[in-house]
Picture: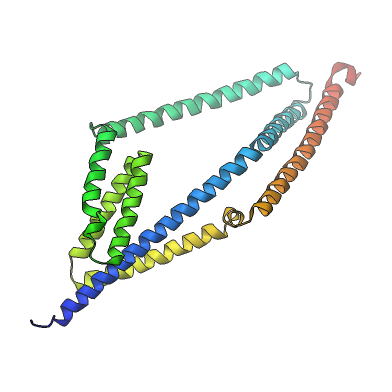
Length: 274
């Protein structure tokens, strides 16, 4: 048996390195997705706890803005304007704005429907999902692995495929199949230089993904996610207390604006001019 040529050995080594980097990329993608899911979960928990206070604060701020607008209107006209007149002006402005947005949404909806009608397959989603899943499973099955890294990569893709199937996420399944097909084509086509270029490209992609993962972990939500339960509850109580103080100050500001508005109205009324 003749020994393998050096270029053949190099190609085998490059293919192994490419598989290793593809597996590492898949693992990084999973870490990124898991971090994003956990941060979204934590954000939802905070929102459910703090949303009532935030909604009250937004409502008060909006009301103060309307009151200050009324006050500016009275200062500009130099005469007393009744609440009914101011309400009518505000209603007309809101109606004009609502009509503009309604027309904009209608046009956007028409464009979206047009794109869908051109791109949607007549095949029902559940049938298309089953076919995509079977195709991917046939291509990716771990028993077809050539080495431990390749098996790990295949198992990771199948795990994501099962999640996509359970979530009935057709776009995710299509993306998995497309990425797998592209990666396999890269593995089995092209010369040594193409393999080297792809390995280098994957190295850059992994660096970018690591930066994104570190940025997520260093974000405000990422740091909160790594607190223990006691510190997390303490932070939540602090946020509630801060919102309540802001609400109290905003209510005080609202009372002052109301008082200023009433004083201005009285000064501009006929009895006030006498």
